[in-house]
Length: 280
Image 1 (spheres, helix red, strand yellow):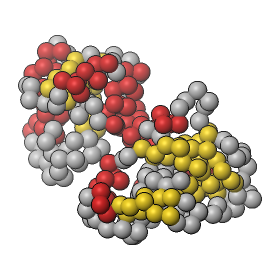
Image 2: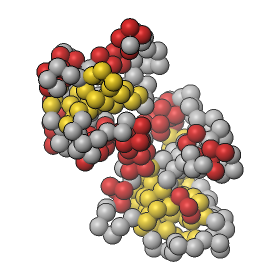
Image 3: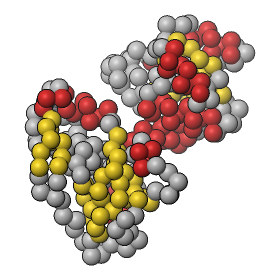
Image 4: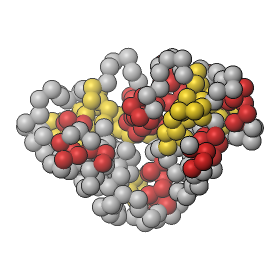
């Protein structure tokens, strides 16, 4: 098969199109012919180096967010057949630790991620355990399905599982036109919340508005004051922030008393300063 193979760290020049052997499914696996694979931020970061996931080895085939058709199934597989349209959950885990047994594979101490530290979808074929291949309805385009695994699952977890966004609440979304924030805006609106979208350009804010955001603010605006005005002086119920250090203080200061700050990214740095007086 043809595959985009990473052989070093740096720019796009460290990835080249190569012919390699087709992967072979084991008894509990499916072989998927890739029809669409999204570009995830982790794919880019690990190409630049250094690798972020333990167990990463070169040469490597990236591509975490994969959709395609089942080409072949292992002898023990039930519920999948050649021709099925599927989208892949990239989080393998080890399958045996307490975290994996509890269904929390993302926090497995021996985490294995398709496209992260296991061969991924920047290839004609990929092999995955059948339990990670989910059927895609006929009316959903496979390119759309490939946008779901990483960005939408992260946004769902942040917005609904951790953030517990509810109808009538006000949600501040930082970097509102990023992949994960595009999902978060829609999920918050679907939950019945009002959304304040913050982004760095008119085009990005226009997209957030098309997705249903109720208040659009530029990064360089006085976001805290605008949120206070929008909420009658109260502040936001929830702030969703995957940007990190650059927006941390604004997100925290925009909250009402008892508000929730959900942090799920560190794009602009790891180190932040917290005023305990402000938290109190």
